[in-house]
Length: 353
Image (tube, rainbow, N blue to C red):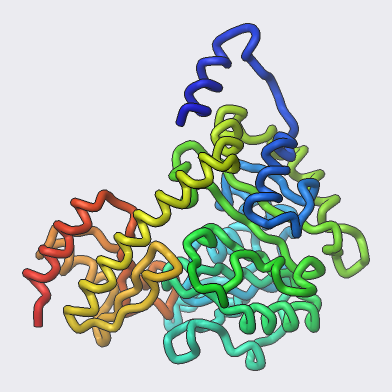
């Protein structure tokens, strides 16, 4: 907070004002991200600082262009499908399946440990994969990510790996970066964000890592195209936001992030325990800030409306994340502790069996 305030105030002075910066991000911040979040396994030059993962997902779609084949987890963050539709990678939605034609939906449920059966999937140009997953809260294990990387390399696919919630992972068997997997630098791009790490949702700061070893099928480097796109379509993240990010990768700032994440993880634990005590099937809530709650035989929007009417609590209908999300709602741990505890009391009062 102090870093943000000081930079903002400095911008109002002749000495502290700074104009356009590097589109790739300030070098000290790129170095800090490399050291603090990757332990040096990716180079600072491979890290491109931006105004957030969501924006970068759209820019990645712009770089790859229309006519690509796409695979997405189901359920998953809607931006993957929606940007694919907008860029022209899909056909019309099939009303019967609620799926867009031209997209390979990879079912991820409790039945398959929230990881797709890759052997049953066709090869695609791009694979969108989020771990920990939004909305299910499932984090992929090392063995699962090894399978994913092997699958992508075998088929010439590029994985767009969304690690926006990686800092919430506590299971040592679940990597926080896909680049911990051998061969991933030859088939993956990773995007991440300070939004959930440090509460930067309105400040807007993230990064995307494009390895030097990643090439298109013709052998040309993906990083070269990404650098050109960022330099053409983006003037760089706000210097004020970057000052806050730089503070986050210092020891004091990093510890503050860890403490904040710990607070939300405790909220998630409280919510998960509540729904389990009420007898629901519950997933997530351990390596992610989301709790995925099943209501078999019911429509997600009906459950949403029922909880809202009875408890004045807003959840997120699972069907909004894809057809496989039908019958679920997502509960979020992002809130004040007193509000979470109040929500638990209301849920127990109205949904005790």
